[in-house]
Length: 202
Ligand SMILES: Cc1cc2nc3c(=O)[nH]c(=O)nc-3n(C[C@H](O)[C@H](O)[C@H](O)COP(=O)(O)O)c2cc1C
Image (tube, rainbow, N blue to C red; front, side, top):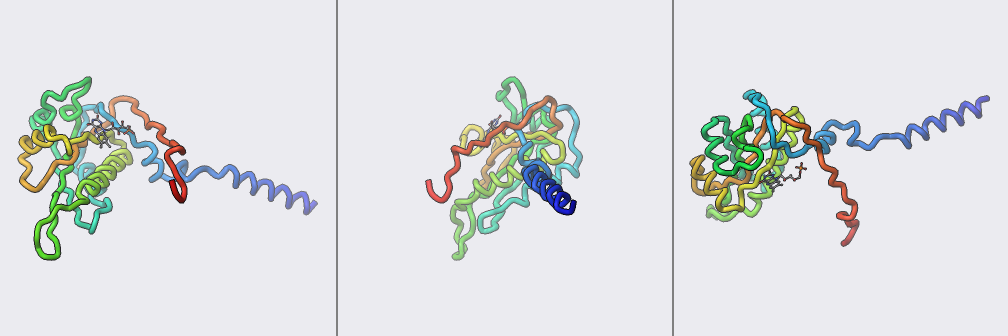
């Protein structure tokens, strides 16, 4: 009898192990990462100041080369300014005009070296990209929708942002992220491609 009981317990343990869900099924951080998707249509609902601050805090929590944190942010909620940034860029949707808040992620492109001389900061785009992804993930985590739209390195988009927003010399607009409550049923895309992975060497 004891032996049967032991076998049953062992079998139950084995089943439990083989049914252990992948970490992303239960872990909320991983769920947020896997559920993030570009959202380009928004309802009219505004964001609260607390939501905006949360998104900025998440962005500024990103990793940064030599911890220089070269990112700078402009948060645009004024309709006239959003419309000016939208300009003639109107496809099926006018994401900048329609969003509740438009986050313009900018970067300081130079740094002061040990000799006190201003030199290019080769990490500024990587740092701004990390901050942008954090912002997108934070938006997903609090039930908002957002999309990364390119600015740098496109001269025309950079000049428009610089002109409309009065961005000073030495600061380059990196990307624009419209954020709002999702209006639609955008779903995450499956990008899992094992063929893109190499182990130990190519
Ligand atoms: C560097 C970069 C530039 C992008 N630029 C634009 C853009 O200008 N307009 C836009 O609608 N989406 C833009 N996207 C969003 C991509 O189209 C989107 O991430 C891609 O189609 C994958 O879809 P997903 O974000 O839903 O996973 C950009 C994304 C990245 C990372």
